[in-house]
Image (tube, rainbow, N blue to C red; front, side):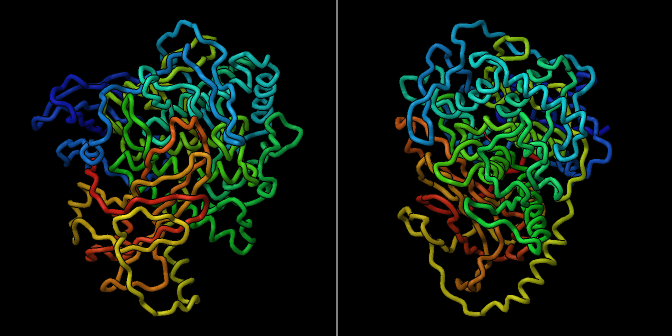
Length: 583
Ligand code: C2O
C-alpha cells in the first residue's frame, strides 16, 4: 500500500491538520512530523483496477520538502482570512436574467429554516456512475422515471425540477451577497475559483439523491456525459429523444448528431467526416495537456483561492475546458440561454450529465495525485454551502467532506482514459500537416506587450521574457512555468473565448505559424447586478511540458499569441511566472 503525504506547512503551527481523504474503508489516518514540517500521512484510496494513469508521481511526493507551493504564488490575494460560507437566507434579492438583464427570482423557496451540518452517508455499497452513451435500456428508463417524477412536483417544492435548476442561478447570478459582506456588495459566486469543483460536486450529489428518493431507489446513480472519450464526444442519444422527459428543446439542434470540437465557438460548422478523427485527437491532446501541466499545481486545474469577502478571478483549466460543452450544447443564437448561460444552464438535464463528467475529471486528477489534498488550507476545506437534501432538510456542506467521491457514497465506472497516450499520435498528425501546408519562411519582428491595456479584437502577438532558462528536471518538478494573461476585463453578459499559443522566436523574429496551443479562456455568460461588475480576471496556463515539446527550454523569451474567438476582452498584460509544485 502506498502512502501519500499531505503537506500542511502553510500554517505556523500544526493546528490545521486535516485527516481528510482518509481511506474510505478504514477511516484511518495518522499524523507525524518530519523535517520540521507537519504531515498528515494517509493511506491512499484503493486503486481502481484497470485505471490507466498518465503518470504516477507519488514517488515525487516523498522527495519534496512538503512545501505548499500554490500559496506562495497566489498568496497575495485578498486575505480577509475566513472561508466563504453559506448565504444569509433572509437576505435574498432578485438575481439577473442574462437574456434581457431583467431581475428574476432565484431565491430558494425557504428562508427561515434550521440548517444542520451535512453528515456524509454511511459507507455501504457505492453507487456507480456510468457513461451516458453506454447506459442500458433499464438504466435509462429508471433515469427517465425519476426525472418525470421530479418534473411533476409542484413548482415551489424545493425538489422540483425548476427549483433544483434555480439553485444554480442562486449561487451564480447575484441572488445573494456573501454573508457578512452585504454592505460591501460582495457577490456570492461559485464560479471562477477553487469553489467551482466542490460546489458542483455537492450540487450533482443532491440532485442524484433526490432522484433516487423519488423512485425509491437509493442505488440510483447519475449517468455522466463522457465527452473526454472519443465515442462520448457526441450528445448522448438518451437526451435527444424528443419523447423523453430528459429532452430539452433549447439546444443547438445542429449538434444532435455532430462531434463536439473543443475548439467550437458559436456558429462554427460541424467537423466534416474527413475531419472527425483529427478533431478527436485534438480534443484528446487538450485533455492530455491539461493534466500534465497542472498535476503539481492544483490552482491551475481547480481555480485560484478565494476567501470570505474576496471576488473570484481565476478559473482553473477544468472550468475553462468545461465552458465549451456548455456553449456547444446551448442554442447558438444570441442572447444565449439554457446550457449556454449559467442563469438557465441547469434547466437542461444534460447539465447534470456534463457536470458529473466534470466531477469525474476532478476525481481522476485526485487519483493521479494519489489523493493528495489539492489545497491544504482551511479557507478551502472549511468553505461551505447549503443545499436542500433528499430528506427535506437544509444541510450545510463543507468542502472537506466531499474530497473523495467515496465519502459521498459514489464512484465512477472505470473507463479507459483515451487521452493518456495521445501525444505521439498528435505529433504525427501535426508533422504530416506542416509538410503539406508548405509554410512560408518569412520571419517578422515581434515587440513586447507595452504598458497599456489592449483590446483583443484581433490577434495580439507579443514577445514575453521568461524568468529563467535551461531549467533542470528537478527545477521543473519543483515549480511549474505558468503563462499568465492578466487584468482582463469583459462584460459578464457576454460569452467569451480566446486561444493562447506560444512559439519559439528566432532572435526576436517569428514566422506566420502561431505555434502550439497552450489553452483557451472560455467563459459562459452569467450576468449579475451592476454593482458586482468591473472586476479583473486572469487566466493561468502551465507550459512546462509544452516548452520541452517545442524545444524552447533554452529560449529567453517566447512569442505569445492571443487569438480572439468570441466576445470582447481587454487584456492588461501577459507575463510568465513560476508556481511552486506541491508534489
Ligand atoms: Cu455552474 Cu457548468 O456551471
